[in-house]
Image (tube, rainbow, N blue to C red; front, side, top):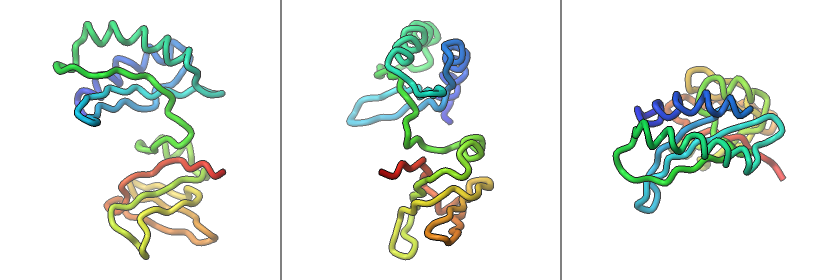
Length: 151
């Protein structure tokens, strides 16, 4: 995480937990020329708009006072989502045995995306069971891992 996201994560975590949620991730990204600071939350049973609003109303003045970002930005609080990205070792441990999509930097066997059951994680390397076969991806191959929801 960048210094900004680390600062905001530390600031947001106690507020989010006081509101009965858990802090999933903080991102600070530029999209279409605008900077966005996003706080992603999670809660047993799902996150509602009221959860996002309460947390946003509490964090907004704290961010204004701490002023971790010199430039203007859009502040958003939202759900981590059903197809959330897995980043930390604890994320992988929590969702071991769940269906995931692994996206690769470079194609392997003509594909850059593999969907299967998360079977292993070790320091960035990911193992996925796909069609009865276990595939191993080295940390340097993996661009992103997300939960996958089949319809």
